[in-house]
Image (cartoon, rainbow, N blue to C red; front, top):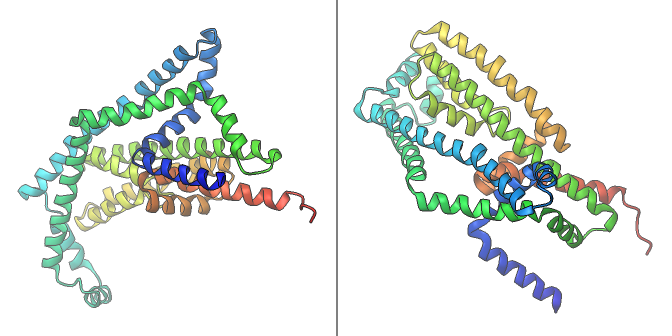
Length: 342
């Protein structure tokens, strides 16, 4: 009966905490990332745990929360400008798509006709509507994050509040969690170390790579005079969470647009820049920052990232690789563990 009661109570607790799973996840991530800074603070402050943990939370606020708020406010303005340009007809991407359609070879046009997209006027209306709605949605959501003070502050407050205690009492909580793991005692330290390594590698690697690719792409778009460079930089950074293909989903259509409009040198320059600068940042940094520390091949990282985001949303870029790494670790331990006598 006690195991049944424990299972039922654990499920009930999980159900209650489900609305806050994002805040809990990021509080745990903050604790895992910033505990190494907490220990030097603690020694310098003569074991004053509350002050040391408070300084860590202040650092998180300055380094993470405030830049996110500023970027969100700027993103809202950029998305609003793009929406107004599309809504007023000053910027009509469908016209460029018309040029692309006209330049298609006969076999591809026939293929599109079989797929039911040969009616360009209908497709043009759908494209314009989709772009306008997408820009309006981004502007509304980003602006809403900026002005919904209660919701934003409450979410950040819950995350930082929980992270404070996880950082302050992390060693004791880790010891309790390690004792509760249903594995032989000799394997518990390895599993805990694996979990910490994967979370650190995934978060630091993925976010750093996304930020670098978004920055590089934004600089290129700004230099080439593309409207809404900040908006596209943020979109590129978000899509860069997808290994190998993410940033190309943004810059490659722009290359096609330049070719269609006759801006050949811009198209060639952006192609070279996208492959050898933006793409190189992903190809060089991701194996070193994510795959190497997590102990997983690149293709496993990519598949589990995509699967995690499909199941858990944006937080899945952490959850997916972490689950995969824990599975690999448990599988390895089960293979190397000595068989129990019957």
